[in-house]
Image 1 (cartoon, rainbow over the protein chains, first blue to last red):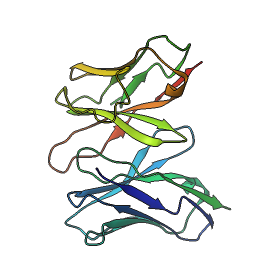
Image 2 (cartoon, chains in turn purple, orange; image 1 turned 60 degrees about the vertical axis):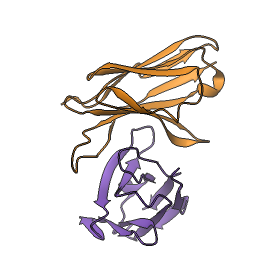
Image 3 (tube, one colour; image 1 turned 180 degrees about the vertical axis):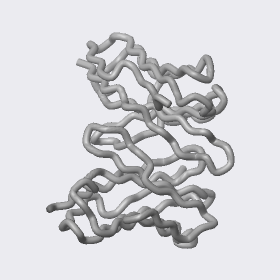
Image 4 (spheres, rainbow over the protein chains, first blue to last red; image 1 turned 90 degrees about the vertical axis):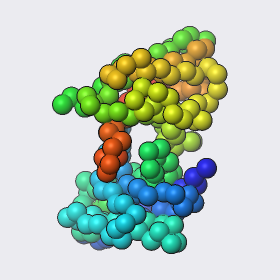
Length: 109
Length: 115
């Protein structure tokens, strides 16, 4: 089955700095690469996704890059704000998403 | 749209009791997923349905767990008998698996505590 790993498991940054979280996966059939954000006590919510025919996608302060050859994709958050503090999950698919172990991001004002 | 609806939001029960969790997916979605989240094991997929048919139940921990989807607007996850190690947050999610529409929308979750 799919093996999904995220690094780092925790990340602390100063407000305004950038944050990068990397996700590696094992299933070469994966063709859908989403990132979910889960705030404390709340449900996971999709923040950005990318498909295998695209190398990079950007949405304001967040971006996702994909390296299908190396089987990894990364979440980039620029100009971090305290409200970015949450746990972030990668979940490569398709159909059946396998969630990574999560990265706890703390943004200090 | 009300989003994915789950009930109850909180459940406290005693070991050995039957627990039934309920989910109403977003109208028009054709796929439904049940997840369990714990600190130790993270977010695990238990089972998912496509067009009301169970597609993959390999994540269901054991025979004490069962899930049904009798129609497109309702699903249940049952634990019988419940055990303390079943304590977790159970999420239901739905999506429209068609073309590029794969986003899963999660419900608010059911926080289960088995004493």
